[in-house]
Image (cartoon, rainbow, N blue to C red; front, side, top):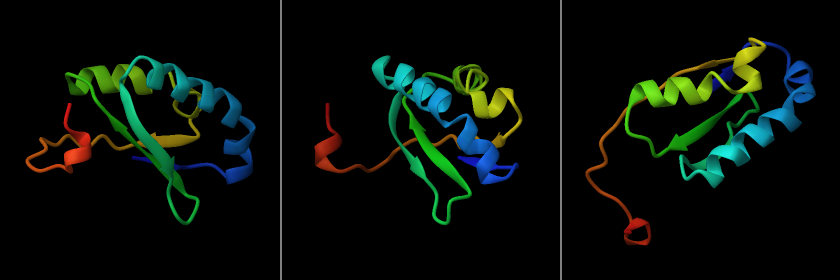
Length: 88
């Protein structure tokens, strides 16, 4: 999860670069889904990675992190149930 810590107008200035960051990690298979929080105060990104350290490294690439526009909260979990549509 990420929480904007600067005005939305400042965040919007870097949205194109943030979108390119997202696309890179969707193409690598590391990101599963993402989207804005409601109200527009940040976002949620669901990752498929092997470790917390990997998530930290990925998020350090995000322009919103680099320019101190958002704070990330990494929540690790181990799925115990899932929809049949998510089976591999």
